[in-house]
Length: 433
Ligand SMILES: *Cc1c(COP(=O)(O)O)cnc(C)c1O
Image (cartoon, rainbow, N blue to C red; front, side):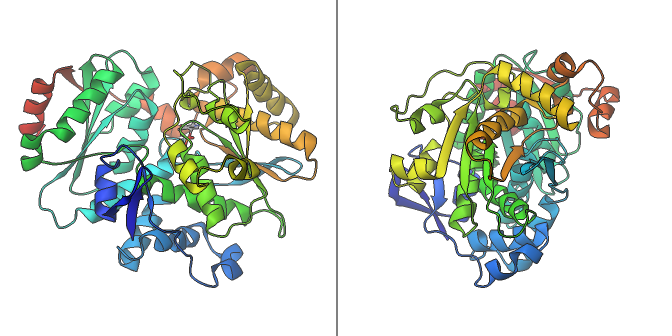
């Protein structure tokens, strides 16, 4: 299978190049050159398959021409090392919990799969693969955990000193093993600049096998398809879900649309935005207008120029009406988000994180007009990751802290100070870190 740029149908590359480069040189995004096919008969048996088996069959459809089946199975099984339970919180109002992975956020699905696929794609290169990640907080943690212990790969995380939360810093700096954290004396933009410069430097490229683990990597999208199919099979037979997706860069929504293109019956998709609602306004008929992001309490969705928008346009062949037939958009304020966390805890004894709560608000609005709908809100993060917000709404100490978070308090930070300066960074990289 070749992968093609959304900006140029003539730019087609093999899987290895699409995954190691993340982005085509024309700044588009990679999509498969044609819609992959599940094996005939999949939709006769899908309800009886395990989560892992669904993952294997979907991965096979995308990557089966490039990887032997047993290698792909190992990658899927190691990636799906945790479950995604579907909870019926209120009648016909479901929540799909995607936060049971190592960093308690749905990004674990994509990152774990990408890590193992990268390892396989570089298996014949005797150089160590160095993965560079610039992070402003959450992504770095998910990526670092995903690569932890993967052989022949080392990860270098660059984060801005004093600009990530204490919890996030602990998640980045206490892993050890093949993960190294650099505490950069600068901003997030400086961290990104250092990573970009390293990837483009011919001198470094001749010595080191370098890549970045960008969130728009095609290999992070595919594993997100798995849980759409998995959750739909847990609903009563004959019901088509309305998937409600708390959205930022629109990767999760794109994966849902791909699940539908593979044959999954979906009633509709709802993109739930916070105040950063360019998609919602676009679906309402306004021109597409990217703008600077505004801070909210669902901060992982504070995206003013969603990077996967280009993939959505390609999937719908730039036809707004076709897009509107499949996707509804809602924007939700911080006040509504807080009220939803409070109401759902009080009425249903269920704790939502701020991102899931944005989804819940959108689902409620949909239900109001479509009382027969079965809504499935994708809960993208564990509530314990947002103690400030949850304590404010529910009172201190109401959210149980999972062991994975609690144990961070005892761990010691280990980070290497680094100037926001390419020559210092390159020297460090050349010397083997
Ligand atoms: C990244 C993230 C989102 C947004 O997902 P996209 O795929 O970028 O739309 C939502 N919630 C949480 C908790 C996230 O970390």
